[in-house]
Amino acid sequence: MSTHTRARTQAQRQVRQAEEARRARKRRIATAVGALVIVGLVVAIVVVVVQAAGKERTLPEVTGAVVAPANLTATGAVPVGDGAAPVTLEIYYDYMCPACGAFEAANGEELDRLVANGTARIELRPIAFLDEQSRGTEYSTRSAAAFAVVADAAPDRAWAFHTALYAQQPAEGSEGLTDDQIAAIATGAGVPAEAVDRLSDGTYRPWVASVTREAFDSGVQGTPTVKIDGAVFGGNVYQVGPLTEAIEAAAAS
Image 1: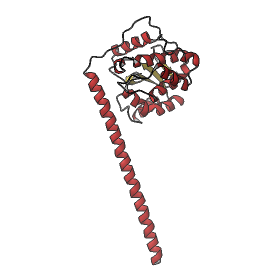
Image 2 (image 1 turned 135 degrees about the vertical axis):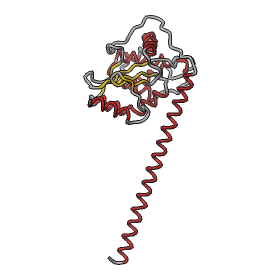
Image 3 (image 1 turned 90 degrees about the vertical axis):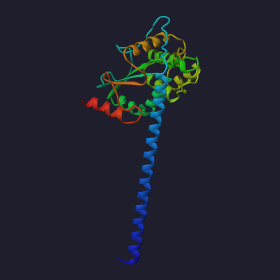
Image 4 (image 1 turned 45 degrees about the vertical axis):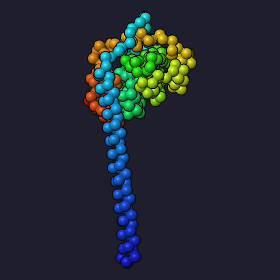
């Protein structure tokens, strides 16, 4: 091998080594940033939980006739997906809850996939215990009652509406979305006009209050509470992967 060829080969090797080192640095940086984001999210959620623990929980009062929406399961949940799916995933949530928003951001696409391929059926259980965090507008109750209308009148659009509400979730402590904004989100999610017109009529507000109280009476401590085939999932719900793995393992068992 000539001196020139050896020099060129050595130069190419050095370039490859430099590129590999650069890629390794990028991977380390991405890993570190990702870890910081997760830690920051967990810390923020812990702060919210600790702050909430220091307050007496205020649940909505059941006033008026309790009218349940149609198309619920026998246990009162809003179903999404094939009833013959091998795994049932229950989700208790409040539309104002920031931890629920983090759960949706981490797991939404995976849940779409697991429902679409028939691995899991989701049972949505909206509750409203954060009304006091929306400056008197009762956003938790209003949004849950609007979701109940969609479950009743357009059940095939319930999941799309649910995910769209989280995609545009207001900050905890704000006034929340207005009824008109909720209606616009529903329209964008494909909810038919006749159902959109009913979203703010208040029909299901007593039902929301009733299922909220039932949830806490049954042992639910906060949101999100996630159950796989009736058992509370204790893994990390704020990172992609752990919930998916648990669902797929349950489906394979």
